[in-house]
Each structure stands twice: as structure tokens, then as C-alpha cells.
Image (cartoon, rainbow, N blue to C red; front, side, top):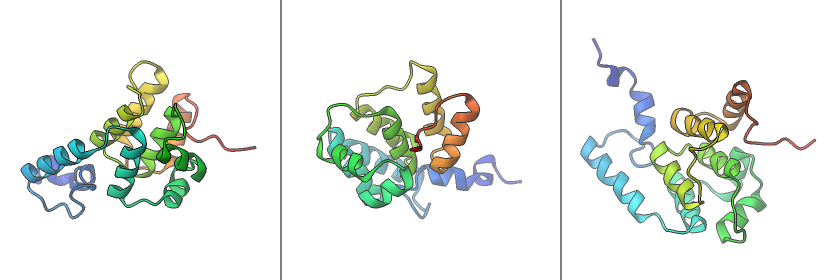
Length: 156
């Protein structure tokens, strides 16, 4: 009989897809790479966003398409031309890049959020922890079922 971990390898492997895309590194090596990625992340949100985009292989255009956050907003975030970031947009960017929770929460911290106070923030925590490999549309559907607003507001 397969162990629970082996039985669910795809889900577990996806957790480390940023640092171990082939799923071949031993656990200790994954832990070292995770620490390295977190330690190397720049302190400012604009630079940290650029760093994670590069790690995950996203261009501004591809990220805009996947996240449904406009290219101009992503551009302003990357250049630091805004003082405050939208929680929904930052969560949408994390989901679109399929960032694992350990990386999403670090990036979100750089944007100045903690995601623990409100019902909406708790829903975002669930999304980032359990649904980071889903599409924005799937996440928005989940949020609607929960009674929360979707991440992406569709223009009328």
C-alpha cells in the first residue's frame, strides 16, 4: 500500500514546484533552496515582485493575462509608483503565479499585509494555502460560494 505522501505526490510536489520543478531533490535540499529563496528576496515589495516573477518565469504580460490584474497596475507595482497595494491584486498575482504558501506569505508581507484579521483575509489565507495551483476563475468561484467578493472585478 502506498504511503499517503506518495499517494498524493502531485499535490506535495507542486508545493515545491518553484525550487524543484522535476520533484527530484531530497527533502533537505528543498529546505535549503526554500531558505535561500526566502533569504534572497529583496526587502521592498516592487523588487520582491520582480524577483518572484523571475523565479516563476512570468513576464508582465503573462502575469496580467493569468491574474486579470492590468499590465499597468503590475507595472506600477514593479516600479514602486504606488504607495499602497490592493490585497486582492496581490493575492491574485500570487495565485496566478501558483506561488506556494511559503513564498506567497513572504511576498504579501513585503506588500504590508498580514491576512489574519477579517473574514475576507481568512478566505485569502485558505486560497493561498489550499488553492494556489488553481486558476483565478476557480478561486473567484470559491470566494463567491463563501459569500466573499471575487479577487477580480469584471468591468461592466
